[in-house]
Length: 123
Image 1 (cartoon, helix red, strand yellow):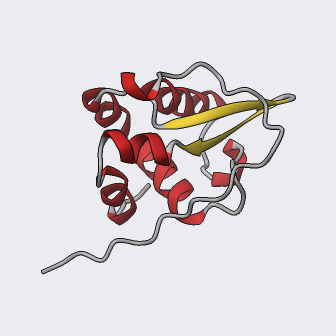
Image 2 (cartoon, rainbow, N blue to C red):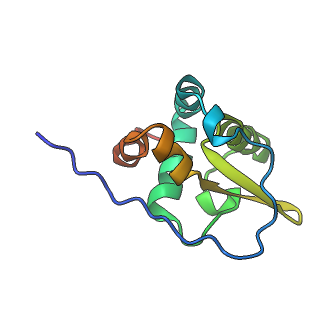
């Protein structure tokens, strides 16, 4: 039995983006760190939503529509960025995120396909 993998959306990077916030270099991405960040169902859902439903290059935490305190969401987005799963940029008072698709595909082929095909339970 084969699993149908949804198509990951990769939108073009706009010109004149702010510099990314601190993150690991592609060569420093560690599988155990990435998997640790993805072990939380909410973080896994954040990444899946970015991969499959992005409407623009990057998104604020409000776009996700999660009913969670801002401090909790900030923690989850920081964990994803520090693990190297997402890239965040500061736009004035807001931060926007997108998945580091090229970096993750190069280091861990097939990982994002698994995330895209994941079926969430109650997140």
